[in-house]
Structures are given as structure tokens and as C-alpha cells.
Image (cartoon, rainbow over all chains, first blue to last red; front, side, top):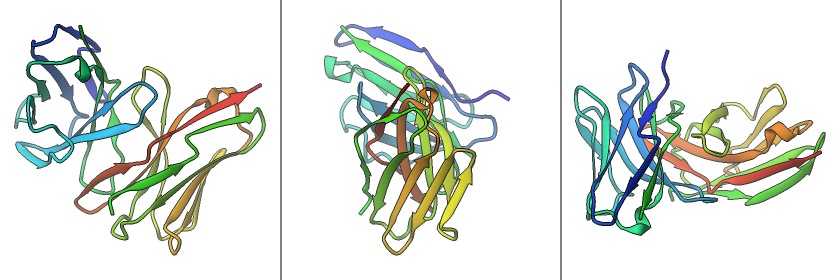
Length: 114
Length: 111
């Protein structure tokens, strides 16, 4: 019974390139959250998606960032034209329902922009 | 109104002691209060959770105390061990509202 799978675990991009982060939720989970974490800091909410729908993207920058959770396949967090300030750990979490269900987290993708 | 305030930011406890982390929330629509534990290089993992119909929940050495009228809840780790050294996040959610996390507490248990 696989948990949340995120890939790649580590991603190095040069400034201006695109970063694509993938998240496969727990089988049967239809809710996905993306969080960003800087070293020694907390979890910053980015976006909350349900299958094929963005429920809440209030934490995501309007420029360069997008997320999707298609009917088939993993959820994708896409960062275009990366800058050094995008370097962080990005965590995906899934849950079977909204609100009061526990979140299952992946082990994150550590993005380094050089 | 969406905030969850967590304190302290960091905590050093001797082995065998009690670790206490506190959280306060504002949104009365929240009805699920989990705690997550995160080790370096890993994602957070659910530790224990409580719903507001009870004032306390205990699982092994971990206890959540919940005060609905004060809108506060806390995590107590009894007989703290070096293996408990991690970052702890409280959280709150309810209904269609996204999960809101506290800012985290870095716990260090020293031998």
C-alpha cells in the first residue's frame, strides 16, 4: 500500500529553466495539497486541488507557478523561469476527503536553482 | 481568522522530561486538530489528532489536551526520548476549509 510518491527527490535547475514536480497520491485519495518549506521554517500552503479542479490557490504566486491534478496521472506543480528564490523543499500531501481527514505527505522534492 | 499560532518555536528537554507544545486558533469552524511530526529530510507524518467533542486524547506517550472555550490545544510528550527530537506542527481544519498549519516547534531531547 504505497504512500504519497514524489519525484524527483532532488532537482537542480539553472535560472530561467522550468521545474516540474510530480506527486502521486495515495491510491483512492482525490485531494492533493502542495506546500513549500524553506530550511528551518514551517510549511507554507501553496495550492489545494481535487481531481481536475483547483479548490484553493491562494498561496501560490500568480506568476510562473501552476498546478494541476488531472483525472488520470499524478499531480504536477510547474514552476516556469525559475529564480534562486524558488529553491526550497516542496511537499505534496493527499487525503481521501476534505476538511477533517489526516494528510499523508510525501518526502518532498528539493529544488535547487543555480 | 485562518491562523494557527504555535509556541514555542524551539524547545530543549532532558531525556525523561515532559515536552509541551501549545497552539491557539481563531476560526470556530475548525473541527479537526492533528499534530504532525517531521524528521530532517522527510515529510511530516501524522502523530495524533483530536476532534472537539473530547478534551483529551492519549496515544502512548503522546497526549493532546483540547480547550474548546479558549480555542487552544496542546501536545504533551511524556518521558521524552532522544528519538522524539524532531519538528512538530499543529494544524486545524474543518469542512471544506484547507488545513492550516502552525509555524512548527523544533524539539531537541538531550540525554
